[in-house]
Image (tube, rainbow over all chains, first blue to last red; front, side):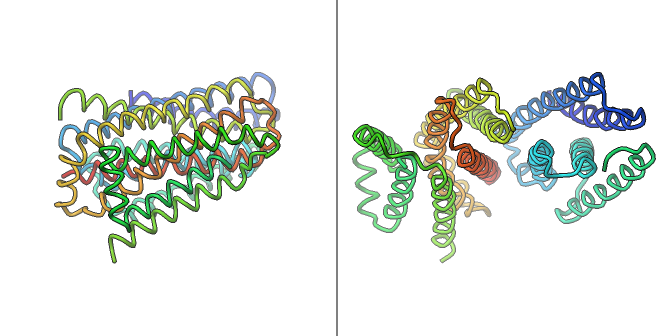
Length: 156
Length: 87
Length: 145
């Protein structure tokens, strides 16, 4: 269930960006594009719910199987922080308090960061290295999105 | 208003029970556990204050400062337990 | 831990997480220009009902098992602060949440949203406090080593 939630979230955030850029390239955000984008956001929401519930399932598993030390692992905590970042970013996006560029970049980077943190089992880095990597990743993604949006005349 | 006063009551009772062992002992003996005592008393206070509101129907609820009270009490309790542990 | 206590712990965590997610939905919905009344009502109801469930299940687990079996393990380990600060904070802050959620639901039932700005603040702070309580739960469980 956790993997399905991640797949829905990562896939959904990737597709949302593709649809937005496609609409910009076409020069308009028509009804059909809006339906696709809204549908994608709904998929992301479902993915998030599955992810959070199954994530706490893992937490209970660690606790009950005597693997409690995993609950103090930096990767585990950063993933939880990323879920909160995604939730807050979603709110800011809804309220138009953050630009489309930065909102999309944060979504994209956060989802992929959560995927990498979950999949890379052997990753053993200090908290500050993980956070720094996330910030660098965010800047790179924002840079790429800026170039793509300028190319397709999409709003920043 | 009712919820805010209940939260202030919970916070005050918690701090008093930590600083005044007889209060904690009273909660323990009366309710079998101090935390059960706080839960029950919180419900009683909330219930009583809610009932009293029927006699003052023109008093409007103040949600603005309920948020502030909840946050303030949460921070106060964290600071209290931190202080108690380290000092 | 007996099977019954294991089930109680699982149910406590599930109720808490579902309540936290519902609280987020309430906050988010109240921030919309046109909140959907039914969605608001369902989620605010879900918040205080699940937190009531978490209160009862967690309370039973805490009183019957945690004090005797878990607390000594934490206090003897390298994360003694997890009980002395975090558990103490969590068990008392948690008492706030069902009241906050219940009051929010009562107000939303009126359907008027006249005091929307205050409700936005209330629902936001309720969610942040529930996040803190959730994180505290993870810290406490992680200290049982």
